[in-house]
Length: 239
Image (cartoon, rainbow, N blue to C red; front, side):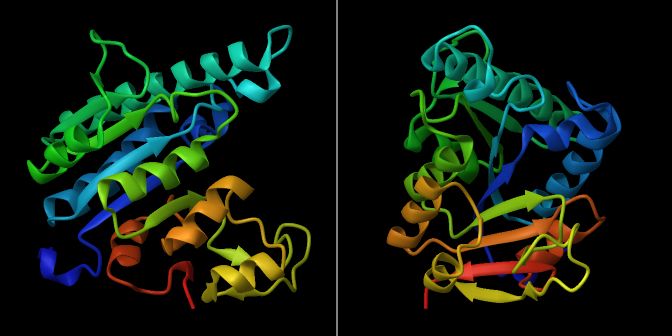
């Protein structure tokens, strides 16, 4: 697919760790991570510069870690995001797509230490930048890391992959009459108290006027359609 078909040229894709676990509920499901890697590889071959931030909830959620301090729990969570980044990078490389692991926590034998300049250099070389380690600090989620990295590398949007096909006015799993928004402004989402990302991440995107596209990734071709501007999810954008 020609790169001219895509509306966005550089994006930050946010994946949840839980998504990689699939039906197993823990660890990395080979079929699921391979399917996602195929979607990413296709758009990268089409010329889209793609950075990825993956959560670590398929191994541990720092805030929920038992019998350790929040700081220690978040450190454990940051390590889990690096595990996921390494696993995803390997899936991409096996498909002929270069991938670089960059971490906000120094692990020289695992990945390069993250700087915006290194991430941009990787993207401009045609590689996928897997940015692990969260923000490198406790008390911040990977949603916030995704928003921050998006701004730092000059990406045009945060693409948030979820289990549902967009943002609804109520839980579509509980309310069959829930209304899905094709597009909504940051201010409208805030006034309606819609949970798009965690509050810190959402406020950052709103202040920086970063569009957030919420879409269902595990449907073949959805990532490409999203990047072409097709209505496969919900776009949250400045007024």
